[in-house]
Length: 639
Image (cartoon, rainbow, N blue to C red; front, side, top):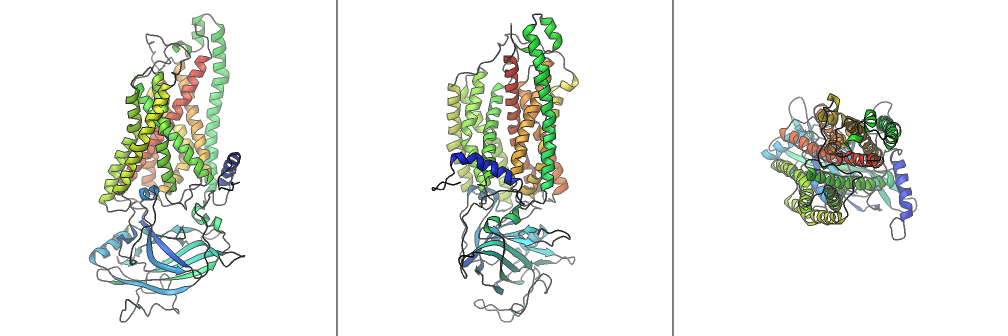
């Protein structure tokens, strides 16, 4: 499949796309992926370094640096290379004091002793109250805690990261200061090398007993090769000011049948594949229903209308059939705030291009979870480079509306949507910074985002706008009258507010089941990597937005209301209102967020997502209606 130079041959790209889509919805893990990093062959006694990631909690949604708590520190803390997506996600990958030798078991090795200060004790208690979990990484694999397997279930399940500690009914706090690591490896039958395929941990709390403490040679009576430390086997270590906490660990290596290419399956395992298929079938039923209506309109009603209009000389006789031809002199009249419509359509095309290309890359497996932050980095960079499409689309549409101030429209296209998103993001980032969370984007990264925006995106929008405005204007299939036609009084169900709100229900209905899994991955610390299902749902969303907009636009034109431009955009775009309403429902029914700051963060980010969804679906609906209206009016003879 790959060329000697490592690239894909063009003739294989479609084959790979199809294979990836099929595998993505049928593989045991529910996802197809390329691991994103080269496998590392490790020999016996080679050094293995555990890296520490952020402290995370689904109750606060505020990540913290691992060393925010008073854990054992190496002599020099070194940050691993970070990409843009990792910084935006609040990931901080740093070295730790936990170092192993490959296939060399160690029993109860003492790492260090820490005396908890008043502040350190307070921090530990707060993080235990908020159910924070410690995230570690070995050979690019996140650590997982095995769950107790339910009766009748053959599939093991895991939790991501281990808890900082726990609180008992006596209102005392206890820290998990002993870690029992298990490293799974797959042996190469042809060489002494092996590859790491699993990284498990079982945390325990133990109050170590020791005599005179020696930092250079620490020992404890509770820590020797004959004593197995398990949860609840010893007196737990309480968190209290001035308490001495001894941190220790043991590690065992175990051969496994899991091959390196499948080592991410435990993270990506989807036990809800039947629900995803139900979502697909549910959405397809909506699409079939709408397709039937569109087919009826296009094949029967419109065919009959056009045939009659092209044969009848008597205008009154034609008027009895339907009213959509009567507004032919006004249907292409530029709408109010036409410039703003051009801006939103251009932004929507930019967002659509970013979404489609990102999903293609994810479907092919190039945005693997092993490449932390890769998905977000790809989305930001693709958004920036798709600016040329935004400028081109907005200026071409603006020229069709006989506009002349293309530079003003270009500036609005370059700054309106990103400016609103950035303002909300900056406010939320200030809240995170005030909480001293590692999730706050540092100044350097903020400056880099500004450079991407002003240095690349804005110039590309201007380049696209210049090219678009140089193109000949799109010609209308019929002439527009000088005097606007009066619109008759509309029935209640054809009023703009009702029609727009009704139009958004079906596009939202096509995606809301998959939306549940997306929100779960974002807010409940799960991996979402079932891009096969997501791609199918995305295609269904496009078709649903297009068809519902065409149906409602036809009914609107038949009632002699020719103000369809904004109505088409808002009809599909109103699905974003239902998305935000579902986000409110999800917050109160699925999340356990109690802090005000965390609640503001949730609704702030969901507002950004809903706004982006509005721009995306609105643009799809607009272009579907634009094509439909031009098609039907180009098919009739106008005297």
